[in-house]
Image (tube, rainbow, N blue to C red; front, side):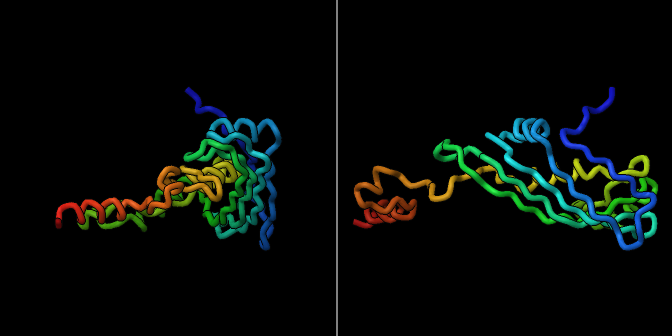
Length: 182
């Protein structure tokens, strides 16, 4: 079974990059933004742009840049839609698959130390190309707040605020403590 096609794909050949590098801009069209909005649970993805510089480094390619998006999310407190911006810095290394295996062998922690495996290996160059569309979509996902809150919305108890009471959980604990000291 073949994996599903990515929601945003921009394949860039890297075999013949100029020594000074190459600038690439990825901008999602309306259909791609709609598909990504649905996949990421957004009300709307108004814009999505990735600006990258690819620089050759031997058999590897270093990718640096920025992903920016304008989104409409749903507030997890009030359930109101609100506008938000996502901006993420991108610093990645791509290398041929065989190079990744060698890289992992050099950077893997000593198994006798029982350390968690928390290093981020390079991404693979596949068929001489890197997918900057997939990178753009991935960094959009990384930048999205998993519990978005509309600016100015908090977790206050409206009844306590109207009565002028401190809605803090510590205020409740203080009242309980006063009741046991008497």
